[in-house]
Image (cartoon, rainbow, N blue to C red; front, side, top):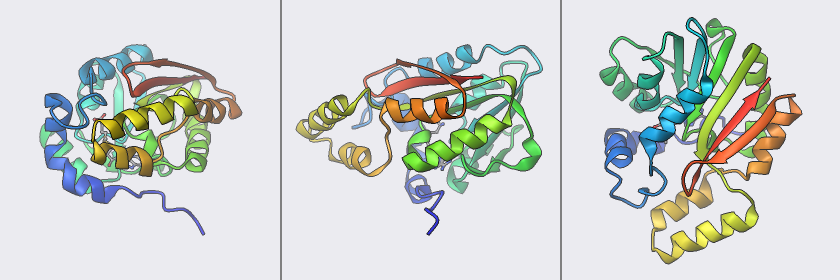
Length: 218
Ligand SMILES: C[S@@+](CC[C@H](N)C(=O)[O-])C[C@H]1O[C@@H](n2cnc3c(N)ncnc32)[C@H](O)[C@@H]1O
């Protein structure tokens, strides 16, 4: 049976209206996950380093916080998100920008080839098998010198994953622990393999305790 490709819309149905409060005020269990959030978004944009006129696709736009930075550049920006609730908020914040209904494994054909593909805090919604398939499909969408820049929670290795889970458990942050254990936060080696299997050069660096910048270049 085909695995469900969009499993988490129900989460954002409840979270959409409070999402910006979580990421900007950082007062709940997710404070460390969103530590340096604005800087993380800026780093993704800096890493893209594309000339004016480039075509950039953002996946998992959410409430549009990364999009706002992308739109400051002279790029043609496209965005997709599967959650109607998140798209509603993005539409309110960015009235001149349209977020299409789509996801990692379903990018509207009319967007065509792009020079850059970006995503923050979203790639972990895919199982590891789906991640590999998504990277393959996204690599096919890149122009000759295109690149992918993601920032999301990932683990350096299994030991690091177990230590983080143990720390979160000892802090009593049970909502976050449940999230870390039930969504599909990857080992870096899994992401590296997915990129390298389709001929992309992979590099990564840590941006906060949870979030890694993950880059794939042709
Ligand atoms: C934690 S929010 C991140 C939003 C925004 N990118 C940010 O950095 O603040 C995750 C977003 O990913 C979207 N999402 C969930 N599953 C997805 C999928 N399979 N493909 C693309 N986006 C997905 C959700 O609807 C949500 O808007």
